[in-house]
Length: 323
Image (cartoon, rainbow, N blue to C red; front, side, top):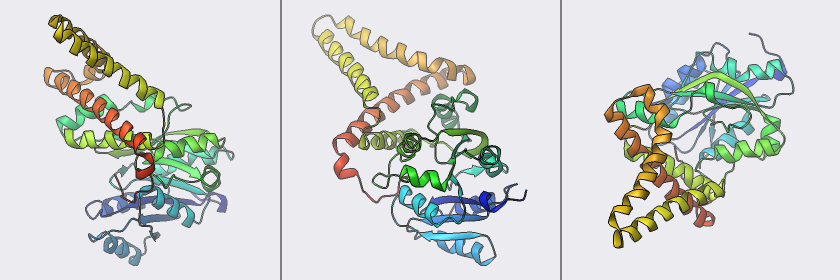
C-alpha cells in the first residue's frame, strides 16, 4: 500500500530493560502488512543489553530510530513523537504482541477521513494460566461492548496526528502512573474525538498473580489520585466501605448477628459484577477467585487513589518508569 507524504507513519514505543521482549516486539513491528516508515524506540535508560539488540537491528538495516529519553513513559512517548518525521503517530508498548494488520487498521481512519486526528485501537488479553484467564475475563470488557464515544483508550493501541498531540500538550510528564487517561482527556478537551480503530488488535499477557494484579491497579489508581481524576467515584466508594465498617463494628457490640448485613451487601455488590464474567468460565474455583480479585481491586483502588491524591505534589515528577 503506497503512502503519500501526508500519510507517513511513525510507529513509536518506549522501553527500559526489555532484553527478553525487545526482539519479539521489533520482529512484530517489522512484519506488519502495512510497513511503518520508521520505528522510533525511546529508551528510558536500559542497562541489561536491550540497547545492543536494538543497535544490531539498526545495523542490519531496520528502519529504527533510537531515542535516549531517561525518565518515565510520558517523557519517552513525547520524545519519540517529537522525533517522528511524519504526521501520523501509532503508539504501542513493548511486551505486547501486534496483530499483523494492527498498523493498517489503527491508521485506516486517517485515510478514510482527512479530518480524523486520533484513533482508538483495540487490545485483548492473551492469558496463559487459570489465574490470568479469570482476571482478564473479570476485568476487561470485550471490544464489541466498547462505546467509542466515551471510552478512554490505552496507549498500548492508539494513533494520533502530531498536530493533535501538540495541541493537547503531549503526555503528562509529571506522572508515571496511568498517564494514558489524562492524555486522552487532554485530546478530548482540545476538541478531538477518537475514531473507531478497534479492529487494530494488540495482544498482551495479564499479570500472573495476585500481588502483581494488586500492584497494577494500585498504580493506575495512584495516577488518578495524582491528577485528581474522577474524585466523586472514589469518594462514593470510600463512603460505602466506611459505612459498612462502622455498621459492622456497631453490630458486633450490640446485636452481633446484624454484622452479617454489611457483609451480605458487599457480597451482593460483588455478585452483580461477577455474574456475566463468571458465566464465561463457571466453576466454584473461578467464582471464589473472582471474589478475591474484586476485594483486592477495591483495596488497591482506595489505597492507591488516596495515597496519590494526598501526596500528589511529592509524587508528581518522579522519574521511575512503571509498567
